[in-house]
Amino acid sequence: PAPCRAGADRLSAPPAPGPLPSAANGPLIAIGSSTGGIIAVIEVLKRMPAGLAPIMITQHMLPGYAEGFANRIAAATDHRATVARDGEVLRAGSVVVAPSGRHLALRRDGTRLVCELGDQDKISGHRPSCDVLFHSVARVMGAQGIGLILTGMGRDGADGLKAMRAAGARTLGQDEASCVVFGMPRAAQELGATERMLPLTQIGAHVANLVGRAVPEPRHPPEPLTRRNRHEAA
Image 1 (cartoon, rainbow, N blue to C red):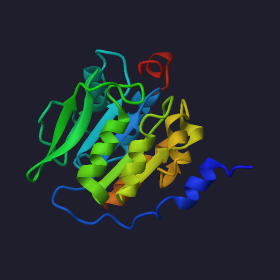
Image 2 (cartoon, rainbow, N blue to C red; image 1 turned 180 degrees about the vertical axis):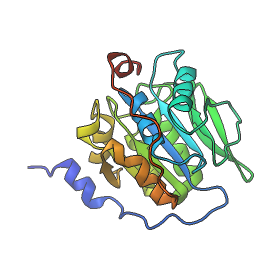
Image 3 (cartoon, one colour; image 1 turned 90 degrees about the vertical axis):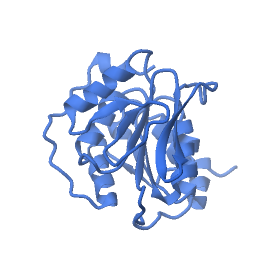
Image 4 (cartoon, rainbow, N blue to C red; image 1 turned 30 degrees about the vertical axis):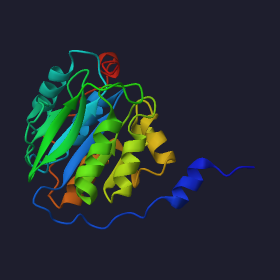
């Protein structure tokens, strides 16, 4: 019988990279999520100090929800989040959310890292697409990238996260037990795209440790998962 695809991919997956090297513009954190991701992203950010690194977020959601999502991040964490603008320069404290119906990508403009928005066709059935974000971070940041794939249906983000790992980035997935839907993280794991799978409550602290920053105690209580925030994702 043919070998298990997941096992074969794990055998051929690149080894876990070493500590992040220093760079004037790095590192950069890219997060992809879908169903259940509103709460998952907030929970991750609560355990990351503000100013840790630029953070780019692609969350599948219904039209008109992106600004509200950014506001919820700002209210529930120590991070100031905004909806990404085309050409926006990213700094260490930047947290940007993909706007509804537009792809979010990263590009380099000289020594600056900037947001690039696009209206190309849907990728993996989505616009914005996690694959678009992750592929752009793989190209621009290489080993300075950190990619997180969180709860969500389908397989958007798996290919892009694998490209990030192949470029030397650190890549993490949310484990099955803490996911609302273990679709996107499962696809990434089976493809060999994830370096580690972690419970949701451990991901933010693990990223902070990778970057070498102290991990704060969360000052905001966790949000309960409700029917509303389960289904805000498209």
